[in-house]
Amino acid sequence: MTTILTYPFKNLPAASKWALRFSIRPLSCSSQLRAAPAVQTKTKKTLAKPNIRNVVVVDGVRTPFLLSGTSYKDLMPHDLARAALTGLLHRTSVPKEVVDYIIFGTVIQEVKTSNVAREAALGAGFSDKTPAHTVTMACISANQAMTTGVGLIASGQCDVIVAGGVELMSDIPIRHS
Image (cartoon, rainbow, N blue to C red; front, side, top):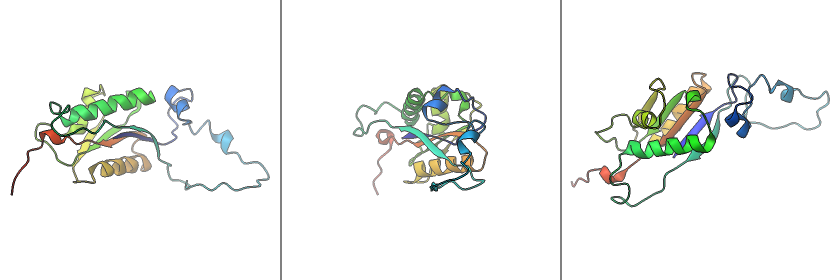
């Protein structure tokens, strides 16, 4: 699965096609929306906290599950990740230029591609200036990729992150003990 994470940010034009589609407004335009009337009858509960960025998931895509050794047998993990990246960008109309960082998790790192996220990003047409890294932490790898993305946005280091996970069991050697 591949997901775009972001927060309502200042530096995107208000008329940006994908920002309007997901109701993401620059903070400078939303000041009128935040102006409270003189008398407020109801209080709106929110999880937002003052001085902390509110990170949101924009959308997500995934490739279908298939049996090991079938249609995906000639693919590499970065091929699946590239397909998910391309599908996500097509579905959301998010321009590649606004993505600040790409993170993928994988359970079993295959030796032919040491950085699945980087290979997938380059294959999907992202700039070689867009940083990408791969997390390998057993079964929690994709979750850690998402958590890292949230941390980068919450800390103000990035505005838009693509995070996800990929696994391809067709090329994993089966060992006996």
